[in-house]
Amino acid sequence: MIRPEEIKMSEEETGKWGMVINQDLCTGCQACVAACAMENNISFVGEVDSGYGRSMHWIRIERFWEGEYPEVKMTPQQPMLCQQCGHANCEPVCPAYATVHSQAEKLNLQVYNRCVGTRYCANNCPYQVRAFNWRDYKRPEPLPNQLNPDVTVRRMGVMEKCTFCIQRIHKAQDVAKSEGREVYDGEFTTACAQACPANAIVFGRVDHPESLVSQLARKGHGIKHLEELGTYPQITYFKEG
Amino acid sequence: MIKKFFDWLKQPLGLIAAGIVFLAVFSAFAYWLYTTQQAPAQPVPGFPHKTHVAFGIQCLYCHPGASKGPAAGIPSQSKCWGCHNQIVKTRDSALLAPLKDAVLNGESLVWVPVAIVPDFVQFNHRAHIAAGKNCEDCHGDVSQMGIYQNPQVFNMGWCLNCHVETAGEDQELLIKLSDCGTCHY
Image (cartoon, rainbow over all chains, first blue to last red; front, side, top):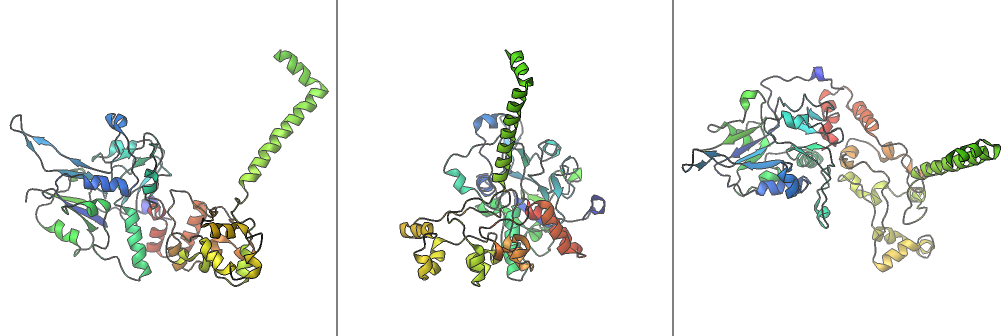
C-alpha cells in the first residue's frame, strides 16, 4: 500500500491533466456551466437555497467591476473551477481522508462515500469552488432519466467539486487500452471544454510538451490564479492579448 | 393500572406470556433477517444456470457486455426465445410460460440484478476480463447454481485485496489499482 510518508511532493512536480482558459474568447454565455451540470449530475438547488449562498456549480463565470461610478469597466469573464492544485489546501484538512490526491491521475479526488460533511475543505479552498449538498434536492420526473450513469448521484451532507470529468478520462483510457494504444491528445475533452462555443477552454495533458494545452500555456503571458499561495494550480488563464 | 400489570407479569402465567411474546418478536426478526439474505425472486422462477452451462453455453453468449464494456448485461427475451423456441420441450413448457408470454405480448422480462455494487462504485467488467480474470473468480461456480447467488459479499476490502495481489511488485500498477479515483468518482 502507498503510505502518506512515501508520497513525494516535489515543488517542480507537474500535474498530468490541465487546462488553458482564454478569457478574451470567453463571452460569459454559461454553456460550460450548463454542460457541467448535465454531465456531472449536479443538483438543481432552487432559488430559496441559492439565496442562502448554497448554489451548486462546479464551474462558474466570475466577473468583476473596475473603477468608480460612472467610470466603471467590467473585467473579462473568468470561468472559475477546481484548479486541481498540486499542493491542494483542501486535502490536508479533511479528517476523513475523503479528499485525497490521486497519484495515478494527479487530480484532487473527492470520495463521496468517505465524506462526512465537515465542510472544512470548502472553507480552506482559496478558489471557493467546492459545493456542499445541503439537502437531497428532488429531481422532478422525467429529469432522473438524464442522469449520467458514469457519475455518482451525491446525497445530502456530501461535499463535491470539479473532477476534470474523471469519468471521461477513465473511459478514454479504457477505450485506448482495449485498442492497445495510448490516449492521443484531443481524443476526449471535459464537458465544459466540449460545450464552449468559442473554444475558450482547452483541456489536455500538461506533462506532454507537444500537446495543445502545453503549447498554448507556453505561448505568451498566462497567469495561474493565487499561485503565490503555493497551490500549484493546473489551469492557466490568458487575458488581454 | 401499570403496577397491576407488572404484578400480573410476575406470576407464573405472566412469565409464560412474556416469554411467548419475546419468542414471537425474536423469531419475526430472525425471519426478516433470513429473508434479506435470500436471492430475489426472478421473473422466471428457478432459472437454472447449471443446465445452461451443462449444455456448453459460454458465459459471454448471454452476457456479452462483459468483454466489451462496464456492464455484462442480461439477455433480452428474444435471445432466450431464439433457442427455446426451437426446442419442443421448452417451447411448450409451463416453467417457461413467463418467457413465452413476454415474447408473444412484446413485453420485457424484468430480471433483478444480484451481483451489484453501490452507486458510488464505478465498476468496469472489460478491464477485469482484459486483466485475465475469469468470471468464476468473482461470481463463483455458476455451473452448480440455479438462480444466481453471490458467493461472497462484494465489499471494498475484498476488491482491494485482489487489486493489491494483482499489482504485486509493480509499483506503477499498484498506484493505479489502489487509487481512490479508479473506482470512486
